[in-house]
Image (tube, rainbow over the protein chains, first blue to last red):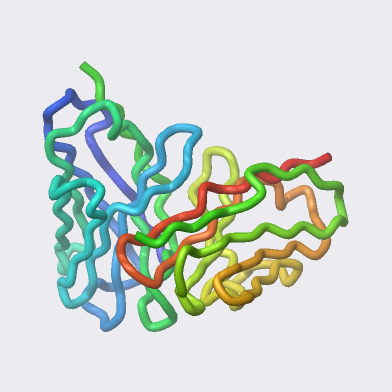
Length: 121
Length: 107
């Protein structure tokens, strides 16, 4: 059974760094073709893809966030991480991590429940 | 970036009705398209991948099709549990892009 769960600080102030953790089970990020992605959704709005990391440590980022993103993984502990530097109120959103089963295609097939992050002074 | 133009933005339909939602890609993405359903307060659920393949556990009344760079999601007989917001996703190239969503309501 594949599960993912996001965790984060809840609230942080503008200019701080947001650190998110995705803890998963039922698959391994050391398995060929596997990946984890991060997607966010401001309240009442649509979905925005942020970044992917793959089993071979290949990484892809959304260039709209202009080098503010860093994605990483800890394969032995079944975790993936996302850092967003210099946050502002526009980064207030629910953040999801999701599995990518790359053999079938680069789609997010299992999602976490999401973690709400509020940026406020 | 590849733009995904999704329509309609909202849709009101009756039970058992046929519903169709479309996404137009700004360039060729092959079959690298997925459809998701999101219910209030929940995370998105994969319905269709590869433009036409049904994800595990998804009812057969859902189907996907492609005509060139236009992709469609069809619900053959709308049920109460199908109410929610539907999104398309292009996974052809980074940055991945989602359609703006279609809010499906019951008439």
